[in-house]
Length: 87
Picture 1: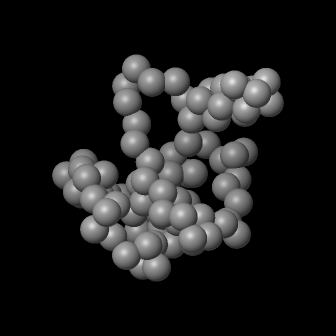
Picture 2: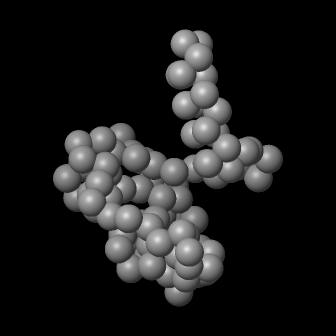
């Protein structure tokens, strides 16, 4: 398992300096949401060397988390509702 210091290094990657072709393409990967959180994390670390940075097709993605922010699911649901309503 990665140590906190190692995760901090992975979290601080500058996406502008990364060749997106070196990132793992997650477009064909499905996450098993029935697994407990720690098992999902272990699985993700097995699929991608950096759980914060990957690509989906041709798009490089970096995930960042804030303690007070809504969950990704809440944010994405809100985005889809606004998109559907035309906002």
